[in-house]
Image 1 (cartoon, one colour):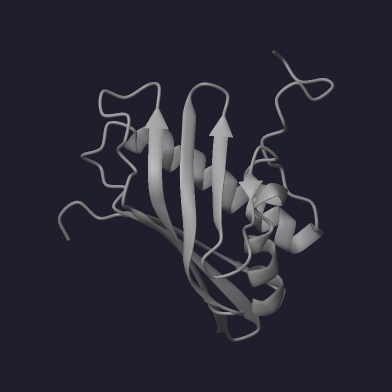
Image 2 (cartoon, rainbow, N blue to C red; image 1 turned 90 degrees about the vertical axis):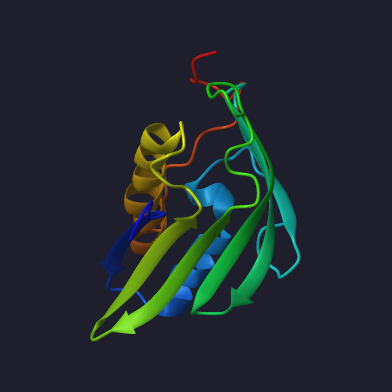
Length: 155
């Protein structure tokens, strides 16, 4: 496959419903800087990381216990020549039962190696998905980006 989109998969002992609920708790694993609703078909929300990254997303597919798809409506990076690289890409979470475990497959459809942000973005997604989201599902505690200005955070 030429220019495959970034994807990563992990398995947990929790149910597909628990994984689905954690994915919808975007503030619990990605960032506390999320504005808007993140759980219902048609919801739109924004993500912001300092002055480096802003994006607006829309839930375009929601199948409880099975799948969540976000469409990137707008995107701005401060560190790439094309600040809108993610625009019109899709972020998908496929959830399935595999024996005694639940598999979560994350794919950022359109985030390909040709993108300037691919290295940074794929590393960040890997950390958020395999680290923070997996932790939220398995322990109830993720590691999202804290809100700017929160006590103890560097300014």
